[in-house]
Length: 422
Ligand code: NAD
Image 1 (cartoon, helix red, strand yellow):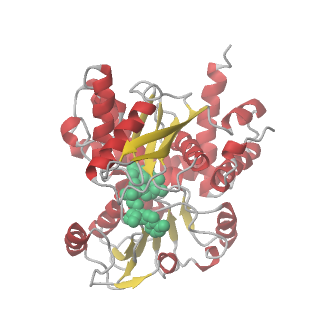
Image 2 (cartoon, rainbow, N blue to C red):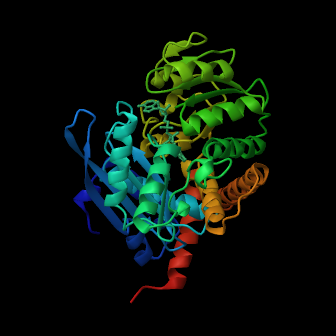
Image 3 (cartoon, rainbow, N blue to C red):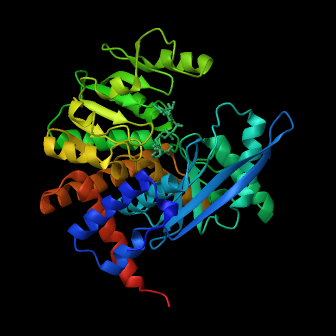
């Protein structure tokens, strides 16, 4: 089998190894296996942009398209100084599986810029985003590849991408990105969708293990961004007690439950969780080992590893983040057998589901009510959960293996039906 140094990255190799493990387990056609283990296309660009002090800086950007058998490539854009080709490729492959599990007519892609967005001024962020859009202009489009927000990007970044793309084409093309502001073609419910979807998956899992989701249920969430923040508020809304949340500055712990009204007010003023008075500040590592019922890692990848996997004290592990558990940790958790894992490609699929709704609404120029969106999201998430759960039962495998089996089966069947060109 060919090895490429471009993808010589721990995260990518693990995601690839996981795919190969499950592919072999299900006797996947060898030709299909060879094609799916690497992305179809990968673009790397350098982005010059002017800082407010007049100096020009050059940063690296990526867009990786893993597979588009089922429909246009779809996946988020991440702004983080550590972004690299391997990480983006791993996330692109995961997007292929995610879209397939929930039955979307979309493929998998991911992109990113190796930059820390936090110290940038609004104008600097806008300039780097617009120039990045120009560099990847021929790679993206509403019929070919549709970016969305991910770590470090948000609705405003999507608005600038939509505007830059539209200016180049000469007319408004809202369908080129999802996760946009509502007033330029965004969808109601998109902002909360990944977090809401995680909670929907937790509701399905709790039902299977006969866990009553009430005020006795203690929830710990790593990351308080788009995914973690929405999940926290929704878990509180359904009556559970969120005892810990975190950001990159601190993890807040309050065994009596955190109050999100006052936390949001504090964040609006201070931007970071550090210093919030109604909770003890512990480390992000300690948060993962808290005695709780539901643990939601919703920040970065590879935080659950061989050294802390044995120490987890949750009953449900719902992976809001992509790739939070290393393969070694996954093996330990499988052997422990006391934690119900909702794997990332299932747990956080709510984001791409409502992104799909947004894209459909943009293409039809017809917008839906939030109630309808949330109802459809619930249907798709619970159907997907059920499908994966049944596969796990039938094949006598864990939920992560079952989720991958479900996705790989869907994509490989379509590939075989379409055939190899020429
Ligand atoms: P975000 O930028 O909105 O929030 C990330 C959160 O993680 C922030 O609270 C940040 O402070 C915290 N964080 C960053 N680095 C950290 C570190 N080293 N340790 C602890 N906390 C840290 O990002 P997001 O969009 O919520 O994405 C979070 C995860 O969810 C990522 O893995 C992403 O790929 C995944 N995801 C996002 C979406 C989406 O639509 N936004 C959808 C599905 C999955």
